[in-house]
Image (cartoon, rainbow, N blue to C red; front, side):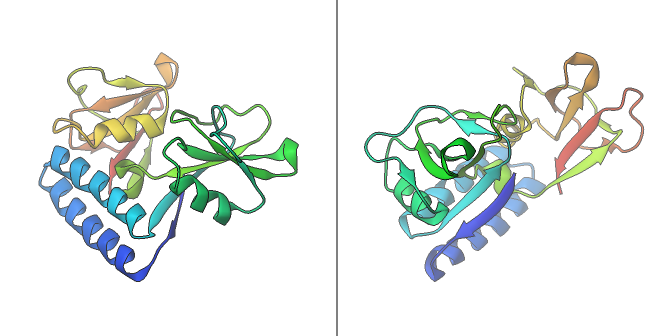
Length: 201
C-alpha cells in the first residue's frame, strides 16, 4: 500500500507524536496498547482534518455509499468519505471515466480487481507502521489463535494487536497464505522454501 496524508498543523502534530510513541511501545512489546493508541490517533486525525490514506493497486471496495457517490477528484472524494458514516473507502473506476466512487466496504479486495481499479482507505495501525520485507526468510513458530490470513494487509492489522506476534511469513507451500509468527528474530536468507517475511522495522 502507498501511504499519503492530508492534514492541518494540529492534526499533523498529533499524528507524528503518536507514531513515535507507537514505535517505542512496539519495541517494548506492548502491541495491544500500540494498536489502541494508533486507532485513537486515526480518529483524532479525522476530527482535526488529518487523514492518512493508503492506496491499493488493482483493488476495490464493495457496494456504493448512499446518496451521491461519484466524484471527479480524489481530494473531493476523500473529504466526502471522511464525512460519512457508511463510507469505508474509495475506488477509482477506469470503466467510468476514472471517477472516484465512495464505497461502503469495509473489506478491501486487495489485488482482486478484474478491471484494474485502484482504491484508497484510511490506513490501519499496521499500515502507519513501517514494515520491512525480507526475501527467502522466515520467523519461527506460529502466533496463538488464528494465524493464517489471505492478504498481507489483514495479517499486518492482526499482528499489531497481538503480544505474541513478532512478524509475518508468507508460505508458498500453503497457497501463499500470510502467517503470524511468534518469533522476534527473522532468519534472513535461510528459508528452504522461498518464504518471504515482514516485520516492523
